[in-house]
Length: 373
Image (tube, rainbow, N blue to C red; front, side, top):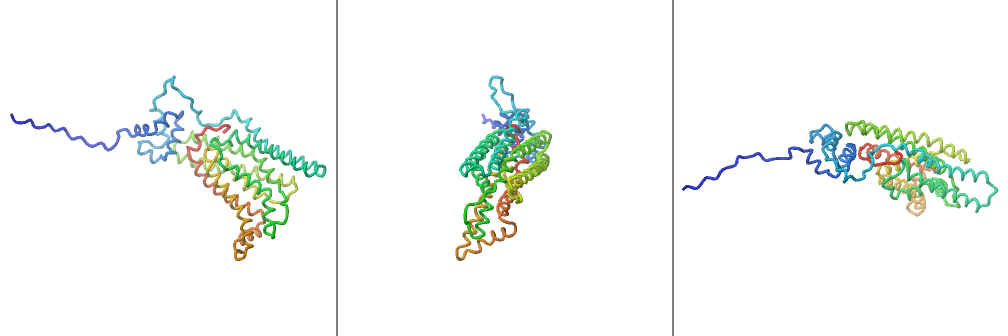
């Protein structure tokens, strides 16, 4: 018998991809979909992984929000017995508002009480007693600031890294830096540096307005997030909110600095202290939204510029290195000793504002649970 001819199977077209692209995406981001308690968290997570509204079109959806809603709807519900604790959905925590508001007032109150005590007892206390009052007031202000930054809209859930070390340098330079620059430029340093505590008093009093401006920004950004239907729409709505929060804080900071300078007998303009306050505000706002690294870099850059100014002047006294000191001499001649910290902090604050306008316009920056925000 002749051998049977082998039967040929009908040719099937090669499958170039899954018939349901959303299913493959859900499998790739399975942990994200299972942990999410709202579609907004999935949308923010997809955005953090690089998905945009254009990418969502390849999954047959008009934007990332619509894609996140389908992923959330198609994720199987957990059994009642295997439910795990999940963080609450992002949103403002208004119940804790009185608590963090009171804490935000404590640093300024501690500095104001210390300054008032020193003014009242001027001439009555010895040098050692006045030094004890200053150290005690500084410790109380630091403790109050620590408690304030641990709660409310200024709390950094992931920590602030080395920003505290750079902040101490900047605050010390705000008190002693102008006198140091003036003595170095004039051929010194010749003696003890005269302290200018007005910037410190004004900045600590501005902690409360900073907390309220951060609360305003976070609440309004969350409302934009819940009402947006596209990532571009959300980003376009958040950038003006960030600028408004910065302007509001600056409008509250300038009068406080002016009153502090007036109350302590100063006559200087608080330009450098205002630039430092805006720099602190932006750095802490980014840290409160889970982005501490840019603020740390900006603070470090401001410290480097402030430290480089007297170092260049001193180096310019060596033979052949005179050109190193010319930029600092020209800057001080044009704007006074305060122009050095004003330039350092102002440039750092401007760069940080540009970065924050891009970083805080992403939905993923507004999905971390905040206390008081």
